[in-house]
Amino acid sequence: MRILLVEDEQDLGAAIKRTLNQENYIVDWVQDGTEAWELLANNWKEYTVAIFDWLLPEISGIELLQKLRQQNSSLPVLMLTAKDTQADKVIGLDAGADDYLVKPFGINELLARLRALQRRSPELKPQQLKLGNLCLDYANHKVFLRQEVGGNQEISLTAKEFQLLEYFMRHPNQIITRDRLLDRLWEVSAEPMSNVVAAQMRLLRRKLAQYNCDSLIETIYGLGYRLNIS
Image 1: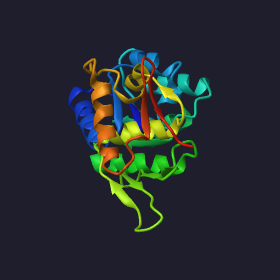
Image 2: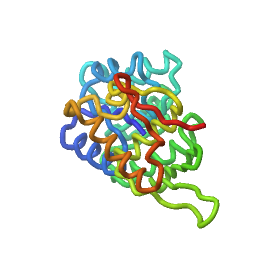
Image 3: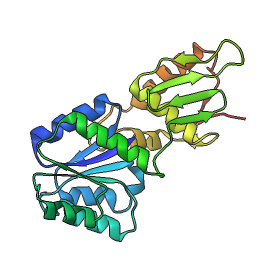
């Protein structure tokens, strides 16, 4: 899941991003409304959820939300704010917010509200993704190889390996370029090494080979990679 976090308080933003990363979210964190809109204007569908602070430099969280809804975007938005009056909450919800969390808040409550948004929104991914003999369990962040006998076998993956496999399973039999993987699975502020995709792909394929799935993802030389599912 990719989240856009718009929060100008350095310590709070860093703490939220760190926690969300630990929960295996991909997080693009920006600190003003203008930069957030540059990411959202034509690419809001790349995000699963957005978290907006209300009081932001340049473009406020409410203005950002209104601009987003004017584009008929259905992106779920959680508002963070110190504004705690009933009138403020009404303004935020009427502007198109899906949920509202008043500062200060507990990080566990934030995570619970994100999970609730996932359950409520029909556009967010289901609890499991099944393709061929593979099954991704989002709730427990696990991958299973389904077998005719002996039950399902768990494939142990890191967070990035899980994200890579999920992306390929969502785009089976398609050639996926290195640049596309960088754009979709690495945060916008990250500066990954030039060979990071190749290195991560080697690790993923090495894991899959342990379960006799080494031919599942092939390298298309000069183009990228492809998950082959008949």
